Each structure stands twice: as C-alpha cells, then as structure tokens.
Image (tube, rainbow, N blue to C red; front, side, top):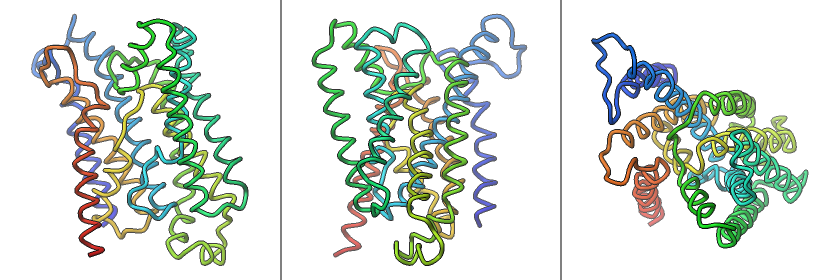
Length: 321
C-alpha cells in the first residue's frame, strides 16, 4: 500500500511540475520554442521557484508527520517546537537592524534564530524530559519568540522596515532565485535524513515511553534527532520563504489513512504530499488575478488550513461524544 501511495504521489508531482512552470500571469506555450523572454521567465523565475516549493513543502510535510508521531498528537504542527517562530524572529531582527539589505544575511539570521530555538528547547526540556514536558517547552519558546517578534515590529525604526517585516512574515516564494534553493536544499535534505532515521523510534513510541525504552529506544537520542531534524527542515523553509503554516498539519492527515498508520510509514508520503501541496498552491497564487498583485502563499494556505483544522476538531469532538 505504501509503495503504491509513493508511486502515485511521485506521478502526481511529475505531472504538476511542468504545469506549474507553464502557468502564471504570462502563460508559456509548451508547443512553441522557448526563447527570449519566455526562456528567461522559465529558467530564472519559475524553475527555481518550483524547485524551492518542492524543497520547502517536503520539509514541512515530513516534519509535521514526525512531530505528530513523536508527540502522539494528531494536532501537532512544526510550529509547536518553537523553531519556526525562532527562525522568524531571527529574520525580523535582520530587517530591524538593516542587515536584510544583504541578500545572504536574512537567511543567515533566520537560521541563527532557528538554531537558538533548538538550543533553548534542548536546554529547557532537559536530557531526560518526557514527551509532555518537551511539548510544553516548545510552546513556551513559541510564545516567547512570537512576543519578541511583535515587540520588534512595534519598535521598527522606519515604516519601510515595518512593511518589509509584515510582508515577509506572510510567507511567499515570489522573487526567489537559485540562491535560496542552494540555501534550503542541503539543509532540508539533512533534516529529512535525520527524521527518517528517527522513524523506528517513532513507531516504538506509539506503545508508550516505557515500552519504547524496553525496545531499545534511547529517549535522549530520539529527542536530539527530532530537534535537529525539525530544526533543519523548518528553519531552512522559514529562512527562504517566511512563515508558511498548516502544511505540516494538513498533509499527514491526508496521507495517513492510505498507509498502515505507523509513524515511519507516513514520513515519506508526507514529504511528497507536502511538496505537491506547496507546488500547486504556489501555482494557484500565481494564476489568481488580484488587483494588488500576487496572493501571498502563507495567506492562501492559512485560508485552506483553517477550515481543515476546524473540520478535524469537529470530527475529534464527535469521536469523543
């Protein structure tokens, strides 16, 4: 079943990628030679944007599946670890200080914020912390990073800096280039490798922490894999695209019924489905006609994710009734 799902998602991606390259305000005719402006649009604007959508979407999808397996909570989201808000805080500080004017320093600040959140999470949770304490530590870091981000916005030195911060926090892949791909791709690949390594431990945790220990799962190692894996995937995504929510929440729920429901079985399909979701959503944002410009990707996914989240909550409530 899992192989068929992976094959189906791979075929869907193979179909969606060329469509996303052709779609936009300026449609490219696939039956005519790609030259001149069309070649420039394709190779320098749409292709890196599509690759970045695949990379960021895969990272968010697999991190959401890993978090839901680790916390044994279907409502878990990568933002709960505090790493995405930490990365956002780092990026906001680059705008606040003016260093964002350098093309490389904004992602560096964001990655530094993600690394700081990872270190703080490991420090607060402790070496022997249980999953519940770990989740509470992540929530605390999320709240702290969110408060500091709001403070930085309210103390923005110029209206231009405030506008840039707010626009960036909305999340988008607009005007991204191969530079962002080179930043995000290796970090996301490393994070995904760590999360796949943690798959066996996630399966054992479904039996409870005590049972997982008896099966040879080392809690400290599992915690380190989760922090590093989620930190790299989510931090890299935020560093190049801003805050893009709900992907890590929606995707695992869509693919889990099509697997054997073991956390390790959900990881790869979630990565593929996350890449597909972000690619299609980004193409939709490009096509949608808006007078003020392009719809921000983060807003579009929030408009999709909020009703999905509400439906999930209502279904869970009916299950408890």
